[in-house]
Image 1 (spheres, rainbow, N blue to C red):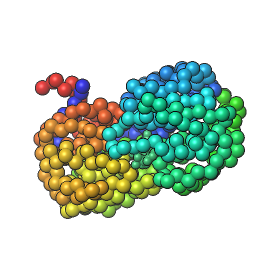
Image 2: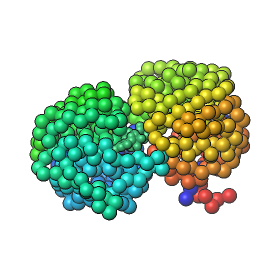
Image 3: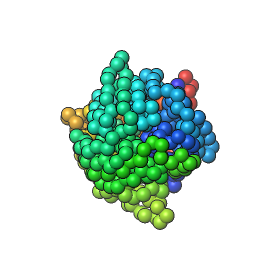
Image 4: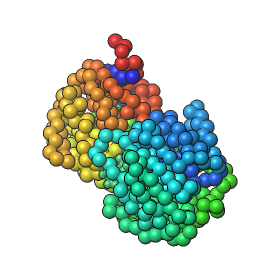
Length: 427
Ligand code: UD1
């Protein structure tokens, strides 16, 4: 197992290239199961979650060729030969539940182990099941597996989500894309990754209106008529990666530029502006975030898009340890998403958990220590804190970072960080 060694207090400056969005790539690669043919995906990030997805597609019968050097992934889903997503794969990546809808569309039957993934709360899959039931599927729970069946094709339906779940909205879109008629989904997720999946399904022939709004209409087309010609799709850049590098730059009193659509990260840019950062739109989609001599305390509350993303909550907490005063961070999307708190405290952060809120008192001088990465974004917050800490920080269990940050070390070094990755046994 590898660890990261970070010597803090070096200023980060420069431009960082973004990888393709993990959360867009996962559902889109999985939706290639709907195409009885070949699809080529560009800007596919080199992440362990993508590796897991490719393995899952192969187990289901796809031929997959993923070239890391060109960030290109070819998926040929002409012949599928399994209905089952096994426990050993699914437990490592919760998004595996997304294979339910395309497998039901292709085989009329699907068996998916109940998912694992990040240890952040209970994370049930009931909305996925409910929306698929509305579209005509039936389910049993057998030995830890969700076993779904459908007679014939999905049928069009109207369904209102109890909560705008990202994954369940993706399930709904994939299923309804193959229903013979018009479906209407209300209170859907509005994240840019939903728009990206919708656009891919449109390229296959589905007619989808309302992407990015709380209501989506899908005019599906029967499986046999879905585009079977080779299709191509480029994954959108990763907005969470962009936010992570901006925060990393700011905490070191530096300046980081990335290329990303401002509307995909507006809530983070608004919070950064309130925190005193200078936001410069440099043209060509490039956005520079620079330190201006102070970091103001800014309280945030995570919300579904376009609100402040839960996937930036932990990193924001790290930044707020260096703000000039007290801020409160409220987590409303997931339970138990404060696993970074005790680790940040090991670095000297003054944090107090009150239910779903954490009070952060800044400015706290952070001091390097050995800490443990616990989930993906929690790990990113430890990296950000370590960049501001005096002395050396060792971050262990960094395989969590490999799930969601491509070449984190290389990108941070490019910006001037003193960071190395080495086997945990090294001195
Ligand atoms: C996706 C993202 C994840 C992000 C999250 C919220 C991917 C691969 N992952 O996760 O990085 O943090 O959106 O922006 O895209 N819920 C239920 N029942 C369900 C589904 C969800 O109760 O069937 C609850 C969850 O427990 C959670 C909330 O709804 O409390 C939001 O979950 P959801 O939006 O579905 O997140 P994911 O799709 O798992």
